[in-house]
Length: 288
Image (cartoon, rainbow, N blue to C red; front, side, top):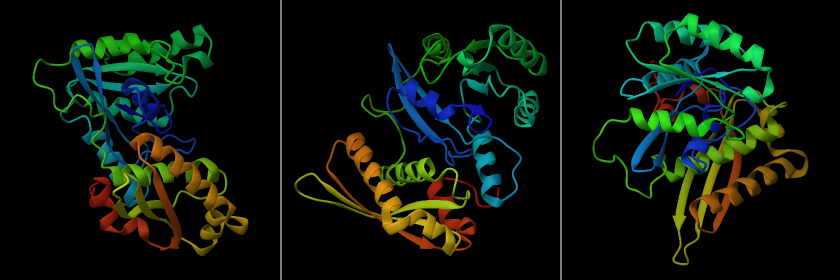
């Protein structure tokens, strides 16, 4: 699944899977890694790949994210281009359309957030996009409320090749639990620091200890690039970090079905975004 930042890819994948497998926030470029969400549609298993948004990269991490997004199409049986109908055609959408035209792939166009614009504008947008690239079909949906999503799901299911399932029936994602825990904390940080904190923030799970009673103790570190950023994350009297920790802990416990004891600290590391270890953990190419 391809699209510009904040087109709604993660929201759509979560809806298609029927569970949260990818984090969502108002901040652009929230998705840094390829996340595979596994869904069953009648007797067909569909693996949806949520990719980072495609944009004009400026930094090493940006380039790695865009590389991961295009890499997600390499072995896909069906490619979906998701476009934010309200935002329309911008430089990022044009860039993706140009890239798709260079590939011999069958692509489905999906216009998202169609409940936010008038029908006349929607039809005009669809015509313009179909003139920019070759699309097999066009769907108009709202990933947020589910309108039109079932028709898209039917069409994608029909495109799946016959063969054995790739994942067990009860598995909904291939993301490791340690990484999922870190991503959930990052989501909460982005949610509450969307206006105040610059883009440079990372979360890592440093330890994970299982107990005989079924509970788990998790220690995480939020890494920021400057000392001033640390103060923003911690908040006055520690209020912000406590809020982030509490909400991440509650949601993670619900997702994994176990009591969670989450401990979060904040550390400063100026050049964390140039650490190859982060790229390996996220499944990104450091030299993309």
